Length: 70
Image (cartoon, rainbow, N blue to C red; front, side):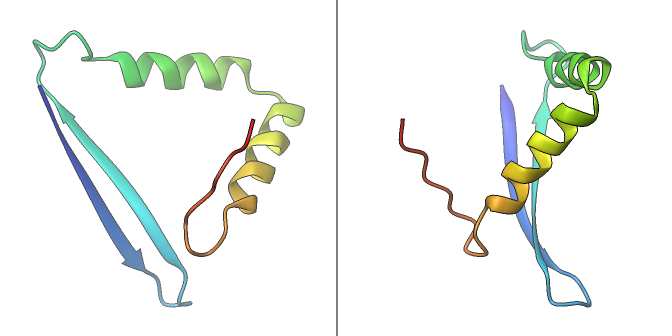
């Protein structure tokens, strides 16, 4: 079981941030998965991959909706 929260925060510059929070029970099969994934990403992250991630992040429109067409 998990509980998912979404919060929007407007900083002093007027930029709006979306903050996603997920609470997972320790007994859940998903417990620790996010931490494991973050550790694996951090271990593989090089300058080229970091730049690619930032390009995707900055491509998201201000409305916060990004539609992918494959």
